[in-house]
Length: 337
Image 1 (tube, rainbow, N blue to C red):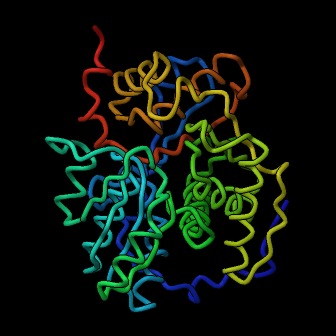
Image 2: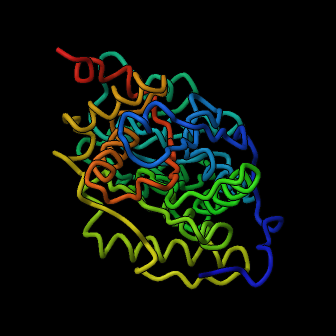
């Protein structure tokens, strides 16, 4: 439905490469058979490298590329205390020789675990901000650092702005090449959708490079607003990404496929659906999901398959966005009994 007038100007965008790309596209035959649904392929962005990998590294290649181009010496971002985005930002900053400040929810724990442990190992400085888990205190901390002589670069929550979304426009191009090489023709790409950047990049990139594939986001955070508000945000980010590449986007809200049905009891709350999704994927394929993002997205995918809302005679791609360190912090909630 949408295509760039010419190949977008990727060379005109600053990029610091540290992801291990392309990430593998694997088949999940036992899971597909167990669900008696579509043939499932898994895009393994959990294998993207950089401190246990994950999808955020794709965005950070462009965001930190800009930080370096601007001569910044510090990066600041924020999130929940077990934020995958913060962990990958800390690792990316270390790889670039930049100081990293993380604006995190909650209070300082007695013993750091999971992602927070990895943040600290990568040399990040945490700032604990109570109930604020979306970087609300970033501007004040940035001003304080400037007063101390630092030159900070502000990485948005989830890496989700037009520049960060370029990571997933490029990811859609990567997937399209893999599908062409394998002569695969999936109907959908299903993924966890939260701050909007991954969704926007995939929506725009697939419209350009694989228009026969429908990107379908499973919402994982009820605080992202109504589906209408969220889809408008995704379209805005996608149009901004296209503009950065010197191309035009014709996406509108009707092109954004999203379900907010599977939020469960709230952000990061593990229910029976998430638990089943993690255990089923692990026992059928030996593939580990995380309890907050991919576990909830797989919960949604399983429900859609069981209800017959995804075509059983088709192939689909589940995009594994990573987040595995959180598993080690939630063991008591995941194991049966």
